[in-house]
Image (cartoon, rainbow, N blue to C red; front, side):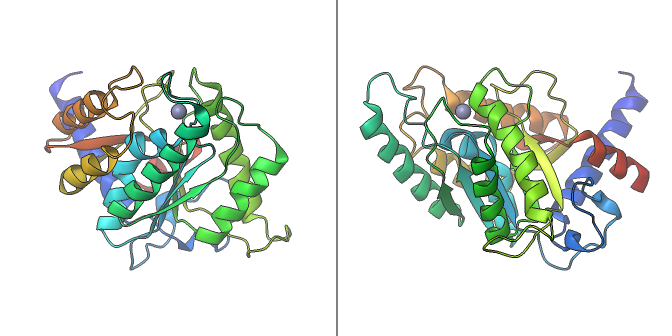
Length: 275
Ligand SMILES: [Zn+2]
């Protein structure tokens, strides 16, 4: 990469971050179900968008997606963390019957510390089904919380639950926006979808949005530390990995700490058109 390319790259990053913080809840207007979110071409709202992180396991929601949620809440938006399972089979030392409730309590505490809500669907850890039932369950929570932004797993994962979550969320967003689909809550179109930078979902992951999360880095660290697996207790040093990643990403966009996200291809194309 030559110098001129690098400069334009960094300019694009700052535009991306600005676009993210301005992302709207108003996307339900004029958007047909099943069409890509309309990206930056939609009118910008005067208030920060709400955000929902939807993850296979509580650790993914907070460690890989939590900084984006924390930032959006810091800016004045509403935040919610949804875990499709409790990650109860994640410990070799603690029985799942005990570990599940520990994970649930940690997620509740961490969400509270970040000013967000925690929701759970208790599909079995390792066996999250790509079923219509799961898609409608997520659809109902999307309709209930009405996020302008959803962050979830990228499909390029070696973890079957993460790949399942990607598929469930994509279809759940489609169902959530279908006006003719009668559920408990009225239809809701999610304005923007992003994929999180997760060590288990790195296959073909390409970051295109960088967020300066320096203001929320400390509170995010404290929230993550309530999880019994944060410091490597289960074999992977989440704390070292995600803290170092924030430093690395920060170097790339000239701030102390940053987090990177990936846009769906159709959303990226629309943003490029808007430029
Ligand atoms: Zn996971």
